[in-house]
Image (cartoon, rainbow, N blue to C red; front, side, top):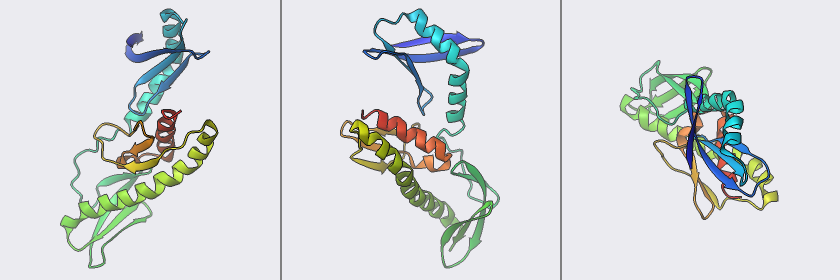
Length: 200
């Protein structure tokens, strides 16, 4: 059920789930949803009291994820434009040449394209390539830790999602938004852990 509390001028919506767990837990998902899991005999007043105490942390977590929402502003793909990679900002530098490539050089993402119109495609492919490599590298040690709970995803795949960082299927497939490669490593880890928890 969806409930609401007021914290100062801030309204916090939260989804409450009762279960046979022994303690009350609060989670902020990568989509900024507040999920509260509480023992079956917990009163609503106690739930709201706990949320008020945790409100500063909840707001901080929501602000963190809001800053990396997968809603990329309209890009012009011109020299000097800023682009994110693993949470850091880089300036785009476009060079014209036959040997097409995308490379990180200091504070720049240098795109060598046969023509300027190719810049967007080359940069998209570069992000996708690094997302595949980085996501699996980040996921591997996390999956190892979850094996003690007999949890292991059937696969990790990438899929463009306009408003979500990740999701998982009933068959254990974890789906990640390639735009997540623009967020810090800690955010990538959080999303993967969040999806692994769904498999427990």
